[in-house]
Image (cartoon, rainbow, N blue to C red; front, side, top):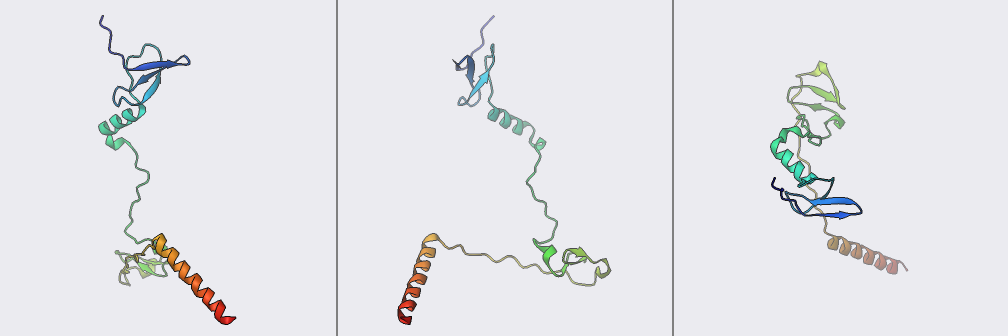
Length: 135
């Protein structure tokens, strides 16, 4: 019988380690009589390619069609005409008001650290001048 190709391996403290046959970069702890091994990363990649729908999607946020913070508004009317006061539905008022127009959030400019430091320096110099004038 022909002997199978054995991938790179070494033994350390009585434990045998063998190189992954797919990526050839990671060594995996193996038992006796093993000729080839696949590391956990390569196994995950193979499984993702074969069964992409089997992995649950936990961190995907589903939109409910309402803007963020709608339940904090004094009055909010959704597309269907449902009226909410502070997040609680008011069924008696359904269809009596127009849907609330939602404004997009303001885009904030982020100050770069250098500009922030120079602004603080200006403020400090102004204070020093004011102290001198008072004395």
